Image (cartoon, rainbow, N blue to C red; front, side, top):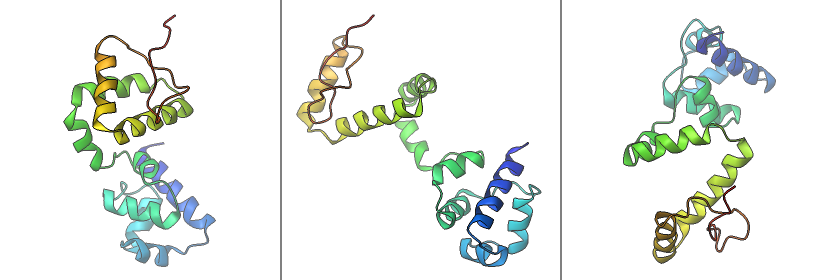
Length: 152
């Protein structure tokens, strides 16, 4: 089943689960009922990002998940990736092998580092650059990993 059909079927199923009529739902997300019907039947590709986001919001769904089902990635991520393309490509390839729980744990750590003072971030970066390749997740100070792990 292609992206068009998967996206359309999911939107239709979610819309019907919520008891939303085609015409009203189409109006609420700013597209024509005919267009929505063709999207739901897989005859048309998923709409532009802003309409996928509107559909996700109207259905109470995660925008990024519905965008992924539409074969897209949120446009705000382009700027993030372009700031550090090599590092983020390596990171994302490595993170691809992790579980959702492990990714959430890394996200918490990244948020803690981003929220830390410039001095704490500098110290942490210096320790990593000095050869501490991995940090333990338990017992962080202010959410920042506290030191290198034993490598096995």
